[in-house]
Length: 368
Ligand SMILES: *Cc1c(COP(=O)(O)O)cnc(C)c1O
Image 1 (cartoon, rainbow, N blue to C red):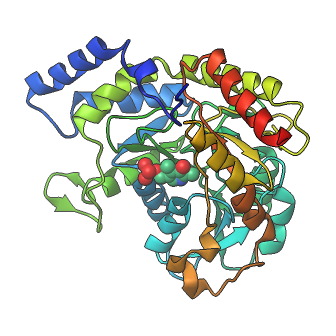
Image 2: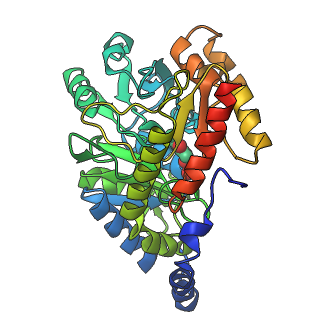
């Protein structure tokens, strides 16, 4: 049985007509940028994310970039990020001229370790950017307490965890302004690039919206140096349809994770996902760890099962960040995760048969 890492067919096929109709509406409206669909999506997504405002933008990286700009973060400022995040979180910090300060994750949850944040804080620290990695909510109570104590802002990177919660509060609603991504492979994916910001603060909403649209609130009047980082009407129309399914899809991901947990539970040397107390996990990725990661990946590939590594090189060891002066050994937990993690296939609509098949092959691998 051939099993791809990701399969859009199971979700996209049944909603094809709905999506075609959404496209037709935009096509016939002859209005393609900043129209009804974007307006509706901002309101729909704000409601889903239990915040007052959402801003629809071009992609997740731009969302994080604008969020930092909106909070006036720039040259000379330090921003705390987990050492094991996707590069986009760090790039956004670089774009505004600030310095990323890496803090190690918890080796069990893979999310930033709140107990290590305080020692990373200096007089230059302005923002903590927790990343809800793989779909699991960070320990936000502790993080918000530290932010309050040191008068720091919080920008959540919620690209992987739409709909996750910590103490029943939804991710993307803790920070002053937060970024998310609607890249096709994310839990809520457009049919192309798209992203968004969420905030409860009307002034931050206004500023972020203006920054995403050339820094203009009145056409051809520019109050600041903004960007063209808008979401287009087609993507918003698609997302308005898909948002209705997001909760169901998250439940399906959680069910699939349970199947994996069950069918992989008897392999001692395979580390399964761990969910922190009071956190929920939306399983954007189902990540296991083993010292034989590369061998397991090859074995699964030989059996036509697609896997990926999220992520093989931590940001501090990337050539792009040589200037930060880090070397191997500086963030050993991030490095350990990078060397041992493997993401197994998961998508809404995946069947238990497929999970059992994959689990059997993984069991086989560890027996030989
Ligand atoms: C995908 C992702 C982003 C960037 O989103 P894009 O829409 O691809 O720009 C940022 N942070 C994390 C953690 C992501 O997974």
